[in-house]
Amino acid sequence: MMRYGLDSVLFYKYLILASFLIPIFFIDAFHRLILHVTTFPIIVIGLIFSLVSGNDIGIFNSLFTAIFVFASLAGVSWIYAKMKDREGLGGGDLWLLTGLAAYFGALAIPWIIILACIMAIMYFFVRVRNRDQIFVFGPFIVVATLAWILGFESLIAAFNSWILSI
Picture 1 (cartoon, rainbow, N blue to C red):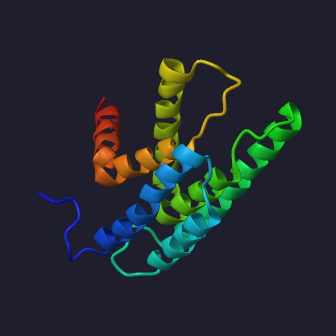
Picture 2 (cartoon, rainbow, N blue to C red; picture 1 turned 45 degrees about the vertical axis):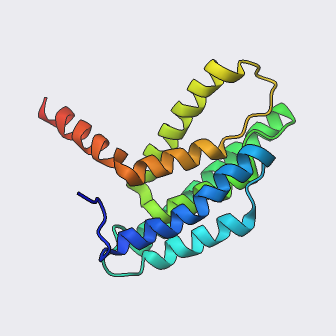
């Protein structure tokens, strides 16, 4: 059974998002760049879809979540840069997460970030192990987002209902 039917607004919403995320994955993995030409349209398209009937989030959720995510991550990034004299979160990651916040809203974006962080930490301990090595986060954001679209959300919902039943 398809999660999103061809007659669903969500199918096209996530198809368009995936068409941006796949190039972002490879460009960031190989060149350590997330270009604005790929992230700014995600923000705009996410906001536009929030106005469309049949979407899963509204414009206020989309807009305010995007503003909150951008401000929060920009603040954390700025503080880290001042404390360590080096960049901790790249600007591309910041804009990508802002776009995803516009796409998914306040309920999903924390889970996507947590999933991306868990995958990145596991990869770091298994593969990298050198804390001074440059480490790209964008591919983990992309994989976490695609996992969310393809059904990770259902696992979280099942987990939440199980917790509430205890």
